Length: 263
Image 1: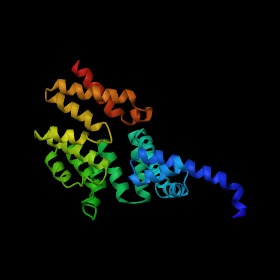
Image 2 (image 1 turned 90 degrees about the horizontal axis):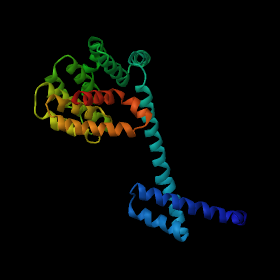
Image 3 (image 1 turned 90 degrees about the vertical axis):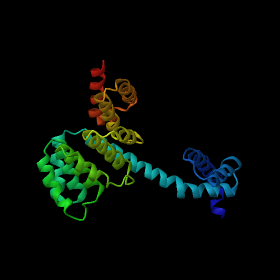
Image 4 (image 1 turned 180 degrees about the horizontal axis):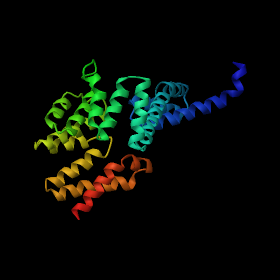
């Protein structure tokens, strides 16, 4: 005990600093109230009980949350950088990954890229083994299959597949499934396409639903409503980071073309 006596003031200050940082974090992330009281005692009063609570909060809540945020941010940047590559380059790299490891993600990823390039037969041939196997009901497989159905002019079959997708899988899956479903409904002349586009725009992970909804409104002769949506997209683009603007360039360009069309 005597050996650490000279370091007690430093330890005290570090723990009190952790309490302050933890309190700010708890407030911003809306943690349970007991954490805020505990951290408040440590930050404001410097009580031993409060500072031990700060130490517990740091290891049980703060550090795990920062690690999680780092992974999410890293994944977002990785997706953004990948989206900037030319399509043919991405197809070639996806083919190389599939030849090295024949997994669900690699096979479905290549099929999706081939579909985007208009190579529907190649995409279908790549996807077929998954449709006949244990992954036939996987959301990734269903989404890729629906995209191919739309490209082949079979929106009814696409909608059928999309109805089987679990929208709770992830935000990206939900956005993609609802956007494709709205396109399928629009292609069939169904009135519910409007509501589906609006649902896809809620908590969306990309500008695609809004841009496609604006195109739908223009096609329906609802110019005033389309202009409202397009204005919102333009506002987002003006405030977006350079990476996000490049990542979403296809949809920002679609919106820009629609604005010119409505002038």
